[in-house]
Image 1 (tube, rainbow, N blue to C red):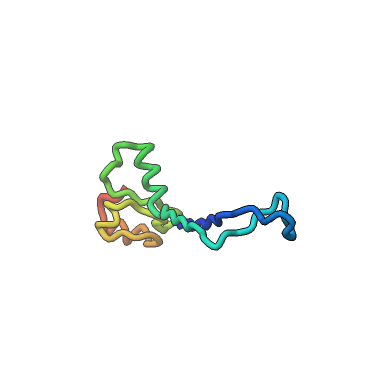
Image 2: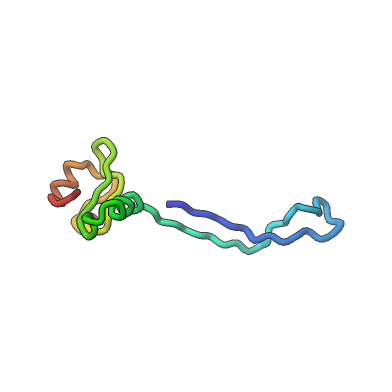
Length: 93
């Protein structure tokens, strides 16, 4: 997952040390969290529409590195061995 923090900034008062183009951090901040665990499986679904609603797993060597929600409903998880994933979900693409 990606976690991004954005600090709101306000200009420093005139005459303050570092005033000019410098910005002082405000006490408040916004935290945005992107969960892209299923991202690569979704990309494959977009590239190949026939995979829509089918269990899809993306593998690297002998591990499932990510999978879509239909695969997860069958018990497939990330970092699972491909042999175990295929045993749990025989229709896994």
